[in-house]
Image 1 (cartoon, rainbow, N blue to C red):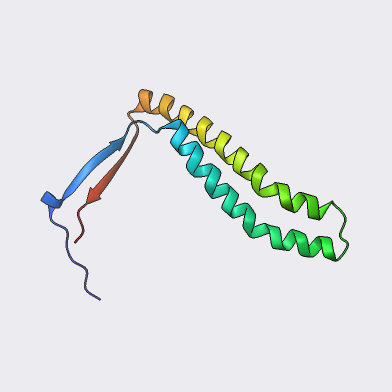
Image 2: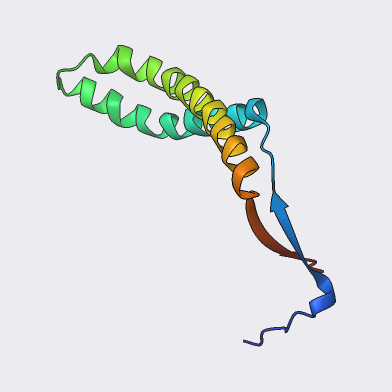
Length: 99
């Protein structure tokens, strides 16, 4: 396996100075909702075998709850990041062009 050496003129340092709170909230809300859907079959199976905890109803609402919590967490996280980025300059990263 050969690794191609990157050339200095093709790399660029960038800084993430601002994150849109609403956009991050939407992305994390959808992501958390999808992750919660993975757990629904297991909760339903547990409910079928009589494991206590209201599994059937819980399985219906858990993706919605996770999505709402993900949205709220995303908005708060972006707000906090933006405050810290003002003080510190934000996260610095390097990008490169690929072909």
